[in-house]
Length: 430
Image 1 (spheres, rainbow, N blue to C red):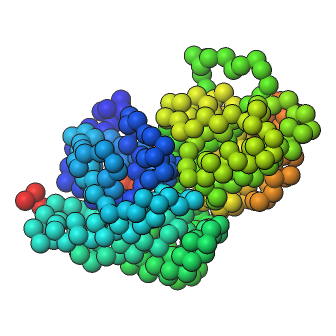
Image 2 (cartoon, helix red, strand yellow):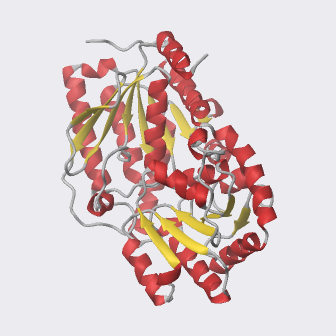
Image 3 (cartoon, rainbow, N blue to C red):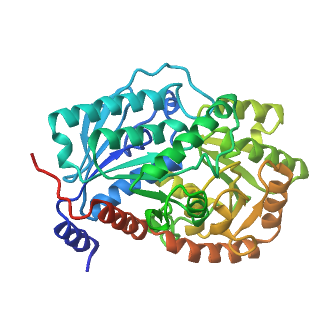
């Protein structure tokens, strides 16, 4: 059976399932992004994962309405395909970028706009067209809060996905983060208790939720990040890697929690040792200017290439061209870049945070070092630079592990959660 036949079969099986997806985080592909717009909402793994999940759920046959913030220059409505539409809400956001999560007030503004939108749906009785609500939550308090408000207003089953847990994963790096961590943990507990299904990325978070009595085992589901295997697997058709020094790649947002500063410090140590490597950093974010300042301070501007924001096909090309991919996160529950690098058969250096050890396993499919440890990062990279055979061995093992995170497979798990919470309820077509 072809993929199109499979999708058609899924659509025939469940034509009435209609997901209302509420998220302040989304990456609209094929859209030119300026640095100013990336300051508004830096594009990272969460945005890409939500976008890919939305596309795959549509391919599996479910209808979706996605409600997200409207950034400058964007239309109010878009249609991705015949089953998925977007409604973009205009937000009163202060144009003051934070060091991590876009503009100040983005999430609160989104939540208030979503609340008003849900109220309109309820008053017009158009909420009956939806089977369930799915809200994507980060480590900040507002998504959890507004998820519960949306459930109260629309009287629909609620699914939440915790992409990063304030309770078990997040460690604040900024004064604003330290101010919000208490409310974030409070609202996360509140939302998990009230959700009809809580979706988490790893067994670690599932265990925390159950042990703390926030939910029951039957209401918490592991649906990890997914990866498009074909996009990142290397093949004979890929161009030959450059014959120059091996590339040590950082690919992610420029935000404190991503550990870009630790990568830069490690690169400086390796440059001073005369390591034969090229250092490449891909991504954008509100700390990019701080990165440039650090490169000047450490006198390694000529040794580190900053490539800025890359489109999805460019990211795949960058990862395939790398010899070593470094994920120096200071907190991270899973991380799409890790899965993409493993899929491409690349040696990875990751930090011992969140669920990363579950994916990599030190010495089996990569090397694991403590967070906040540039010398440790440098030592792990040096070990790989000194041993191309070890890079190949770990790369082969990583590619086998990544096969279990294929996007369609994990999206089918999510579809099962949707079926479970929506039950036999058929949305109204009025």
